[in-house]
Image 1 (cartoon, rainbow, N blue to C red):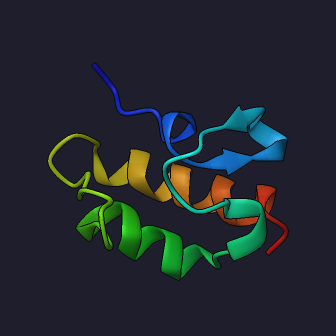
Image 2: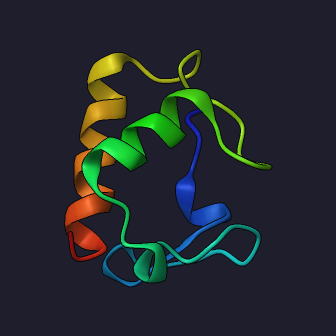
Length: 70
């Protein structure tokens, strides 16, 4: 199964209301920061480099940055 960011992170534009991770609306990560976090993980967030293709990771990072207001 594919990972779901929405299980952990709130992001209004995606209708995500997760409560485990920080709010992406508040963090407003830029694409590079989101890309790094998705690839390598950060804090309690696991890395997803082994679960998503590089193209998928880039697409998710770009979407998160845009949706969060970057």
